[in-house]
Length: 66
Image 1 (tube, rainbow, N blue to C red):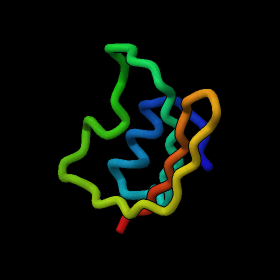
Image 2 (cartoon, helix red, strand yellow):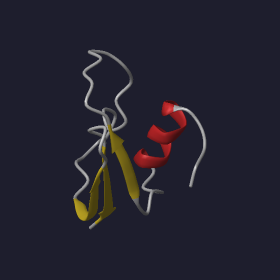
Image 3 (cartoon, rainbow, N blue to C red):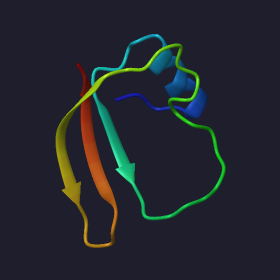
């Protein structure tokens, strides 16, 4: 678990220091913001581990690099 802002998270991703991605997706389109994966030099293959759907419409997705 790493606590910090989007810039900190992007640097961890870029350096290959993330063992597992736990993404919480909310059913809302904002139209702007800092993309977590927008600064990658090359694609990262992610293996889906699990998905959890919540009653309010949010979805939790867990991936591991693979």
